[in-house]
Image 1 (tube, one colour):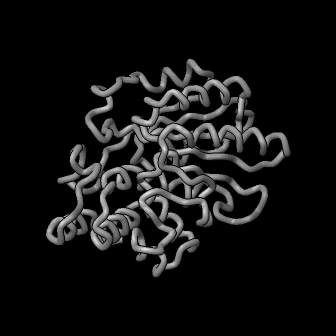
Image 2: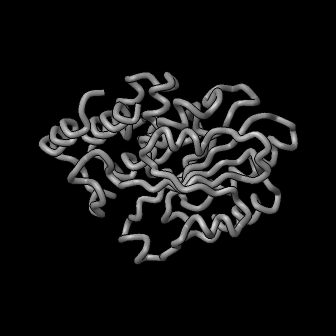
Amino acid sequence: MGRTFRRWIIEQSRASNVGHIASALSIADLMAVLWGAVMKDPGTDRPDRDRFILAKGHAALALYCALRWKKLLDEKAFAGYCTDGSPLGQHPEHVLPGVDLSTGSLGQGLSVGCGLAYGLRAKKSPGRVFVLLSDAECNEGQVWEAAQFAGHHRLANLTAVIDLNGLQALGHTAEVLDLAPMADKWRAFGWDTVEVDGHDTAALEAALAPADGRSRSRMVVARTVQGKGVSFMEGRLEWHYRNLTDELCAQALAEIGPA
């Protein structure tokens, strides 16, 4: 599923000539596990469904891959990514099924996730809330206000994942604003925190699985590689924005392999 997402990301990035490719590739495995194995009834109108927020909205193409996989988008709609009149923009809009929050302004997703989790608990709903953030997004102060809120209210139905790929738009996160050790900071805010390889799907599934008796919010710090699966993109800052050529697209697809 993750390999298929990577192929779709590359193919559609080339077709639309739109960037943010490496950011989408780094979360392909995270999205595959969340949407393929963990979440319950995402994108439906069932009141007890699990909710998902892509706080790092610039990686929307990976989310659109998940919606396509779950048949919430058909191939024609997916192929319209970033064309005039399409609801599939560079950042996700909540007009789409499975998109519980329009995102793009970094730092806000976790706060909304806290509100959703608090409301679901008040209604005694079994629904859970999953929020996927970037590591650079944790430079935003609002993230830590939300962390305090979740820790104080012990929102056990809230799970967040940090895509810890070490890069952001203008440089390495350790150089722009170093937040290491990341996991220790979330533990200090009262979160049940684990660190995993963000490309190890079995480890991710175990970390994201519901745990009986959990009484705190769960934070999964997922160590990832920006541009994962494509050698000339992996760990390369310029691929935060750079677009593909036909030749590079063919090379990327060859390296990813068949779906």
